[in-house]
Length: 390
Ligand code: NDP
Image (cartoon, rainbow, N blue to C red; front, top):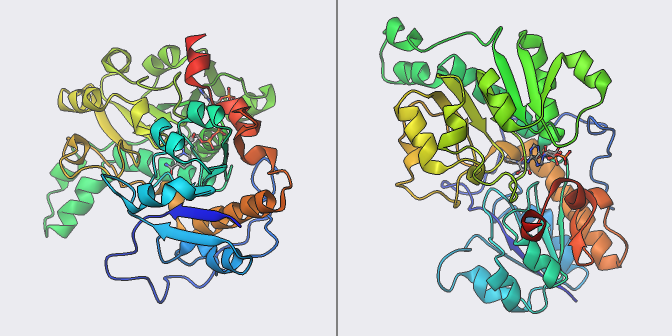
C-alpha cells in the first residue's frame, strides 16, 4: 500500500467555499494539439469546485483510501520541521503544485528513501531537482497541457493591462478619484506593436494565436521552429535566440521552462538591448529573470512595465522587491490554477496515480523523468545540469 504525500496551498482565509460564482464549466473536447484531456477511470469531485487547496485534496481521498492507500495533505512545506519534511521519509508518492511548490531538493530526495513518484499537479517540474530524481530513480510526471490555455489567457490579460495601464486607472476609481490625465499618461494601444515570445510551445503558441486578431506584429524564438504553415498563418518572424529577438519587440512574453539554459536569461545585459519602454511579461518561472535587474530596469525606465505571476521562492516574502517596484502588474502564482484548470489537473493527477498504482505505463506526454533519465515531455523540453555542462 502506498503513502501519498500531497502539498497544497492553504484554504481561503474565510474558509472553504460552500458556493461558487458559476454553476458549471464549459465542456472542452480536447486540447488544441488534439491531445485528449485527462482520462481517469472516475473522479470524486465536482468540476468547478476548489480542489487545489488543502480541503479540496485534489479530490483524491476517497479514491486512495478506498483502495487501502494513505493520503496525507498539508500546506506546511518550508522551514525547520515542516509537516512535509516529517512525512517525507516514508512517502512513496509526493504531489505538489507549482503555485505552492514543495521543493524536492537533492537533499530531500536523498532523505526520501521510499520515494518512487513525484507528481506535479500542473505544469513545470523545476521545483524537483531532476538530476537527483534521475540518480534516485524517482519518476517525475506532470499534467501536460492542463493549464496551458489558462496561462495563455493570463498572459494576454497582463499584456493589455500593462500597455493600457489598466491597474492604476482601476485604483483611481477605488480611491474615489477622476483625474483622466493621470490615468492616460502611460496608456497606449497594443495595435501595431511588435510582440515576441521566448518559446512557442503550448502556452507560447496559444498566446500568439490569441494576439493575432489585435493586429500586432508577432515574433518568436524557440529551439524548434514551428511548421511553415503556422508561421505563415500568424505572420510570425522567427529569431534564432532571445538575444536576436528582444531588440525588435515592444512587448516580450516568456513561455519557456526554467532549466539551466533559461535560468537568469533576462539579466541587465539582455534587458539593456530591449527597446526603451518595452514591456516584459513572465508567467513561466521567476528565475528566468534576474530579480534585481528587473527592479533596476523599471526604476530607470528601460522597462515600461513588468507583469507575471511567478516568484522565487514561493510564497514570496512580504518584503520581496517585486511587490513594490514601479509599474508592475504582478499577481501571486495563480494563472494556471483557475477553477477550470484545477478540474483538469486534479483529473490528470488521478490518471497518473491510477496508472502508477496499477503498474501500467503513465502517458508519455505526462512524463518528465522515468527509468533514470529525462523521458516523454521531459526529454523534449527540459535539460539537466549535466546536459548544460556538456
Ligand atoms: P511546452 O513544453 O509546451 O513549451 C515550452 C517550449 O519552450 C518548448 O517549445 C521548448 O522548445 C521551448 N524552450 C525550451 N528551452 C528554450 C530556450 N532556451 N529558448 C527558447 N525556447 C525554449 O510548455 P508549456 O508551454 O506548456 O509551458 C511553458 C512553461 O510555462 C512551463 O515550463 C512552466 O514553467 C510555465 N507554466 C507556468 C504556469 C503558471 O501557472 N504560471 C502554468 C503552466 C506552465 P523545444 O521545442 O525545443 O522543446
